[in-house]
Each structure stands twice: as structure tokens, then as C-alpha cells.
Image (tube, rainbow, N blue to C red; front, side):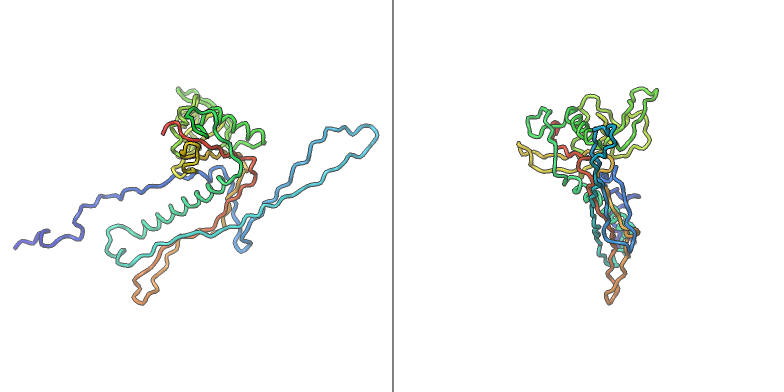
Length: 313
């Protein structure tokens, strides 16, 4: 009798492709434009930022009598930011590694790294979105409240940040002699959900990133520019479900200026961990990821949380 795969089945009865299908990974946008500070090990579990209030301008002349004007005192405000520990692990049996065709440990370490990066971004997102004040979009035409985002709403946000003396994060990109390109000016960064892409691209004079006169320093998550504002989008952008007047999803567009917030890390404390088996037969082990971080708003006047609904769904 001839030995065939009918009477001696192979270990894998299906043909494997050469390459694993790439898993979904999200764009990370909420750390963009934020300063990162590293807290030294064995120093403290919190970082303190000190801010001094500005002196009040006084246009009263000193005169010619040598009079001493009323002085002013410095006022310091301390912002204390404690760091927090985060992490997760994957429990695994040795038979998974010994019999599986895939490089399971390599895949696990990669997925743990993606988990850490996406969680880090969500933590920063929620801190930025917690700013108390917000600015509803009101110039749209979808009949909801807030309305869809428009050029007038973006211009209002830009004016709000300029009036608060917020510094732009990126410098402009000057024009070049290339057909269909456009220069862009010094910009604030707007961080929002990918669902807003269609509405943004319907705004007059919106420049998609492919049309920038200079492509240096452009991230994958960047979509475009209008009114001195560069827009970065992610599928895990900040949203509030069923919060509009018409029970539609409200999208938080967080526009930031320089020094509005910081992210804090602990020196050398982001690591991948392999924990060997400790059971009697040494069958079960874990691989894990652990890190330390914090995010803190430094100056709420240097950021605007705009709220919008969709025109194009």
C-alpha cells in the first residue's frame, strides 16, 4: 500500500503563506509636539515643574523727582506630576512554542511593544482631552450642535491660541517651483480622529500633505494644513459617543501650542520581560511588557479642545 498524505496526514493540512498578515496598528499622534522629560532612576516618583507668573506691565512714567514706583513680587506655581506604572503579560504553555509553525515568541514581543505604544498614546490623549474648557464648532451646515468643522472654526481656534500668546510648534515650509504645491506657515498642531478626514478635505484652501512644498519632517499620521494648523489623525482619536444635540458622535479636535503639556518617563524602565517557568514540570511561562509614564497639562491656555460632528459620514 502506497504511503500518501491520505493515510499519513501532514502536521499542517493547509498551505501557509510565506509571510504573516500584518496586524492592525494605529497611528500615534498625541505625543506629537509634546516635550518629553526623563525622570532619573532612584531620584523620585514625581517631577515638579515650576512656573512664574509674568509681571504686570506698568506704563506710569517715573517722572523727574526720583520717586520709587510700587514694586512687584514674583509668584511661583509648582506643578507636581507623579509617574504611574503600566504593563501587561501573555501566559503561554511550552507546547505552543514547540509545535507551532509561527515564531510565537517573536510575535508576542512585537504585539507587546505595539500594546505599550498605543496605550501610551491613549493615556496622553485622555489627559489632553480632559481640559475643562472647550470650543464648539458653530459655523457648519449639518444642523447639529456642535456643527461640522469649517474654515471659520479653525480660524477661531487659531486666533484663540495667538491671543493667549501660544507659540507655534513647527516653522513654515517655503514655496518651491513645483507644480501643484503650496507653502505652509508656522503652525499649531491639531490632533483628531480619522473620521474627520473627509470633512477637513472639503474645507476651501485645505492643503493635503502631498501638496506641501517640502516633504521633510512629515509623519504618516499627518493629513493636511489650513489656517496655520497642521492636522494629524488617528483611528483612536478622541470622541464622545451620542453627545451632540441630535445624539451623534462628537469629535474632539485638540489643537496645541508649544509647551502646553509634557510627557514624563522614568529612566530605563521600559522593558520586555521573559519570565521562565516556575511550575513543577516547567511548562508554563509568561512574556510581558512594563513601563512608567505620566502626562501633564502645563498651560491650558496653550490648547483648545474644539468639538465637531460630521457633515460627511
